[in-house]
Image (cartoon, rainbow, N blue to C red; front, top):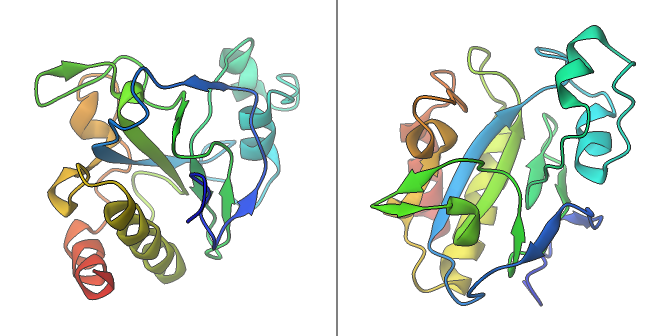
Length: 181
């Protein structure tokens, strides 16, 4: 990792980011799940959403995305390919209204990783392997980030969000992460 950029990721800078209040305060990694349209994979829409170029008329479900400015630090696709949209030392706009361990505004201190998937369809072996490598690199880079502080979106926004959902195998992920650390 160099300058907040992950060595094993393709780089593409999303316009949807800004400075963190304290770039040294990176202490949580949030795992998300995303597919656009819901349940469909391998399409260009996630990239377009994070780059601010999505045509909201391309699919009826995209109406709610009109004017939305969101991003994540990285997306891990079904085949394990990683695209990094925001360097880790900057604030990506992924968590929305959120709280963790008594702190609000998780975007201020969290790394957001999107997995291409749904709450109900199993994630791929390649995604788990890449997530474990990415998480281990982040844990090594940021002293306040520990394996215990890797959570799902549903943990920081429990009323609003359900991802990465019951299809995400936390035990399997944690066993892979332990091997990487």
